Length: 267
Length: 372
Image 1: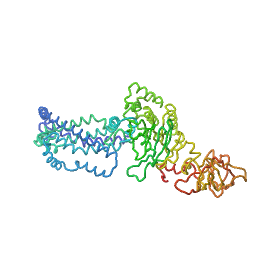
Image 2: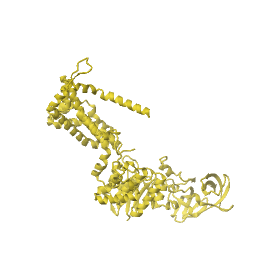
Image 3: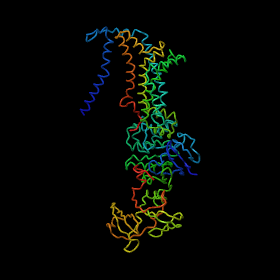
Image 4: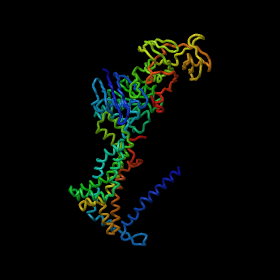
């Protein structure tokens, strides 16, 4: 089908232009010494990368960021699972009200919500601490986990679990051998999504964490403010890398399956 | 005390106005195949899920081997269920699927392998041991599903319309397999279907369920000889319904008086029912006189609608007995093909000819017309 193939290539070309092209200047910048107008290409240099790799704080920041996002993803999964399952598999009175309530953190401007949060956190001694930042991130990431998983559960056939029970599987075994394998692809996608949301948090991290918790976006913002585009670009690329690596590792779950599809679902 | 006893089971889903099960009593002996037959939405599957422990009744009790199992969780009841869909775990192989229950029991590897092999042989799928569950055909899937339920040697196997998605040939194969399993393992089987043919094919006994109640529970053949109500009679091919009056054990109708063997004593209006093959043509002048109103050729037989004694009557004759519309014929009845039934909800019976496969129950099971 040449026509279908043509459309495929067109879509790929569009994706390339829309997603990768904006990254191109960043890559070029990171290898430049200066890039003054009207030069088409900059004066090449590895200055930015040398600088980034020579900073030991860079590694620390990276580790903090990864730890933070991983903990947030895990907590969000634990907290969001039951809610998502209920929303995806059941009908009950007031369901849309509950959905709206869960969606709120994604609607309300982060800055307003964090201001209020910070007031409470200060009193509880959570401000300027890692757990405080974790809680703030969880609040903003939760809607993505709940709605991601809920759409997985919408296509999930609960009869598989009933089948397993009549074959002698207790609750834990049903969960481990039937539920988790059944929703795994969708669950991985939801986790990836939440990881990225936490990974890119800036406002909530800086307001709640202050100077105590230093993540990559904070470094990035500082560099951009300083006007050294070369170093900022190098950090921006480092910022993207872990997400790309995660994406590559989980790609087998992503292939052919959107957020909405688990393995066990209705035809 | 039977092997399995359902006592006054009542069940109602949240928000429903009518109970979905309205007092179910059923006794099943060990090694029996009992079919619960009824239109969709009558509560058959709910009954199975109650027995399996996947739902809890609001009233009543379930006794297995004389002990109530209501408080025992589903996974410990020893009751396995095969659903309408095969529900094979897609991330497992055929062998892993069949052995799932054994794995849950923590059976040693050697025994596990041996039992799985035995099951594979039983369902004739030896070659597909390591095949992914997603790479099977519909019939194979259902066989694996059956083997998976059987391998744990349950006290009871519940089958929820497992044949409905299969074509005619595969259904026969599955039927053979189910009968073979009963013979080999003396397994007690409760089977649910809306298909009358399927029920008759498999059942030792049939429980006919309509709107959450069991209308009749008898041996399969009894439904053809002694239906209890008009609806049951219609469903099992009784074609003619004629208003009549019962006096003691005798039924009086336009065709005279019939003393029906086995009929309960009763006084009052009743519905006389006659199988279409009950009429035998007699020489001119003998028996009842009838005028042919319509003719339907059915291959080996011809279905006629005739009028006799001011009553509409449907009769089936062998195809060598050919008559045309308006012809006059004389006939007698074979007494054993006449029966009297209660009229379900209505107290008065109307004269009607109901050919097979057009009964209200049949229509309801197709979902086209679900009413009383």
